[in-house]
Image 1 (cartoon, one colour):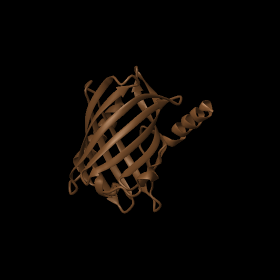
Image 2 (cartoon, one colour; image 1 turned 180 degrees about the vertical axis):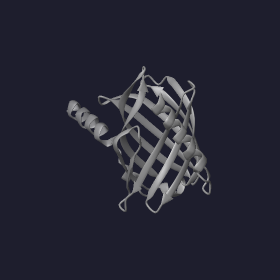
Image 3 (tube, one colour; image 1 turned 90 degrees about the vertical axis):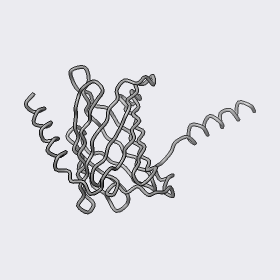
Image 4 (cartoon, one colour; image 1 turned 30 degrees about the vertical axis):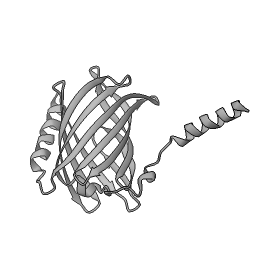
Length: 196
């Protein structure tokens, strides 16, 4: 009898722990990517390996421009090891809350779902690794805490096993900012990578 209860408890814990972004449908303030990622922003992050040990820190400059449901989000990352990297997201918002996006270092298309104050999305990211590159699966949770602040928790997976965690704070700075300077910096970084 006791063993039956133990089995029920374990099964309940396993299946009861899964979460869906739709669980946060009623949470406020509502996350609208076209508002939060409009204009300039700043991000601060820490990467931890699978043991929880801090391996890398960074900050990033962000700037977004939107035309209806299509957005361009420009990101320049400054890492604690001296590396500078970039990403240009091309984002698409869908009427049912789905989000899709592409970037030069994202293999295929990122896809996710907005609900309430949250976004969950997944994609395969090509990252530098030991003088080469490696593709990792990214599972990304964003939570709008205030209209100008997002907390982002990300896990990176290889062969289905979690290999790292990323904790990120994003802040919207100026929704009226012009993105031309950051866009030009991305173009210079991209040209430098092609020449290397």
